[in-house]
Amino acid sequence: MSWEIQLIACFAASLSFSVLVRQPKGSMLISAVIATAGYSLFLLMGQNTLAYFTATLLIGLSCEICARIMKRAATLFVTGAIIPLVPGVGLYNTMRYVVEGNYHQAMSTGASTVLGLCAIALAITTTSVLFSAFFSRRGKKAAP
Amino acid sequence: MENTLTTLDAVCLAARIILESGGETYRAEETVERMCRGLGIEEVDVLALPTGLMLTLTTPEHGTLSRIVRVHDRTTDLRRIDECNSVSRLVARGEMDAETALKRLTAIHQPRKERSWLLVGASALSAGSFTVMLGGGWQDFIVSFFCGALVQLVLPPLHRRRVPMQISSMIAGALTTLMALLGTVLLAKVQVEPVISGAIMPMLPGLATTNAIRDTIRGDLVSGGARIMEAVLSAVMLAAGIGLMLSMWGGIGL
Image 1 (cartoon, each protein chain N blue to C red):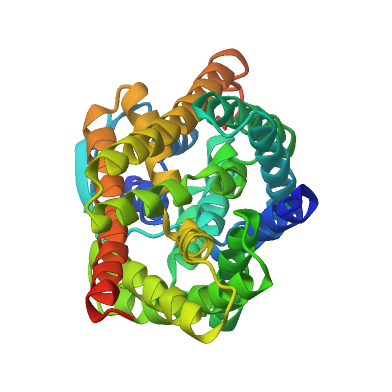
Image 2 (cartoon, each protein chain N blue to C red):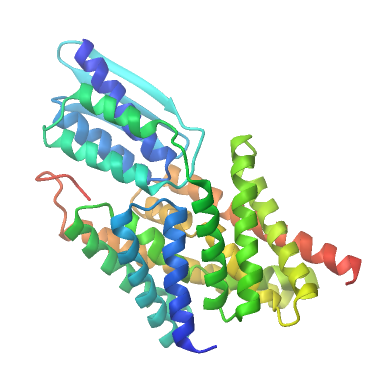
């Protein structure tokens, strides 16, 4: 499958997911663009745990910046932007190995799936905590 | 007294909306604190959990006022969080009084008519697109498209009848797998892996896990732990549904 089609699909998927979680209209396109950028970085870096972390760092950073510019909560952007990275294939493959009775494979696939998820969560947390530590408007105006 | 009670009602409702729409607990706490300060109440203590909220206001005139709010229903509705945020910003800046805020928040909290066909379409399209993103072809897209639509048709009625989220996750996983396996029978070039993994993507607790770890790192250990539990459980139930259907299909031997 060529990468152009994958990225177009990623954009469409993120956009329609943002309709599903009732994202406000102004933030949908932005988060789909961020999602596509993050996913392309993820593909470029070879889809390993570090790629999860770095791609999420990019997504988190862009979302926080957009949230500051548009004076909206960062969660609005993050929800739609992060979804292409969530390791669905890993979960499915883990389950398939379990059903096949192939527990060694299931353990290693499961472990790398959980690691990926942890990398995503860690990167998002890092960006949001650092951003609110350095660029907080708490006290002056409403916090993000 | 009247005014303080209205304030209490307004901040409770704001926090409840945030918690019910899938907002982070620290967001609920910060909203309460900011709104109270904007309405002239300096002393406020609030503890928000994913399943409830406790808060205490202290005013010189009326002493201590407390309230507990129980949160049963948790979905993801970003629009509500956004609208609630804009109300709380106005209140925090002193541009809106408690009564108006309460009215606005009540309007936000009202269940509204959802355009369900739009949600079905969005679910179908996102499932299909995820499948293509994960390397599926056009036949995989079609099967996954129908999986997404079916899931969005089945889940809301279950939710309305108060079937726990975890059980409906399992049902959704099983249905998706069944559709994908049927697809391999009906269409020649359907691969099971991209179809199922694409179709379950919108249901995976990605945001929930992220929020959970964020809560934990910020020091909200109770809500972080509870959210991790919730996220893990719904992922495991989804996987259980898939596994159940895969092994049943293997048992039939098609």
